Image (cartoon, rainbow, N blue to C red; front, side, top):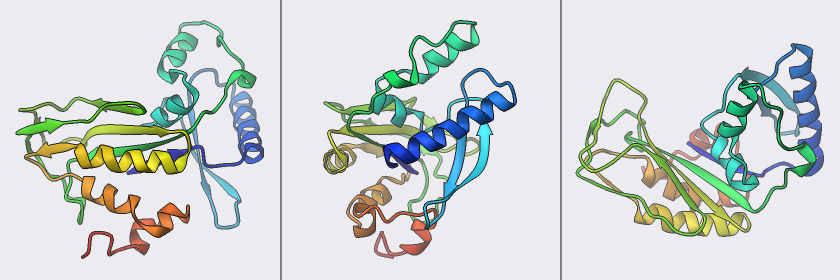
Length: 210
């Protein structure tokens, strides 16, 4: 629903990165891939899975590094060498991605229908990846993702402030969306204090006042 970064310290990121590279080398993998881990309350990481492709949250990495992962993946797949080294990768600022699903924000039940109004804000630090438009018929038999809104800021606080403005200006009439839930999360104290786990929604059942 919501992804953001950077989150880890440089030391932890370097350690995980080294293990990811070792794992790819061990199986002779060459190309674009995403390694996923779960981190427990003690800071220990546990391998979850690896996918030989970008994940939906790749836009966060692109936003804070300035590099197009899809382009790089295509170039490597066509036989080219990577045009940059890991040492050339620099993170700048903080990015938050919101998955705008056509779902009831309380139950997450899909909400198919026609978009009678569709407006996504723009501006500095805002990226929108979407296929939605006025008159678009959101089907009920496919993924409910309407758009990804990615917001960048010089730091996490600025990214959150910009996100509030961006979501308040987003208009998607004709279907239910999870935008109200995103807006509630941005004002919730545990989220603001970075106390977030995979059980966040279960632990905060009253986010929308229900």
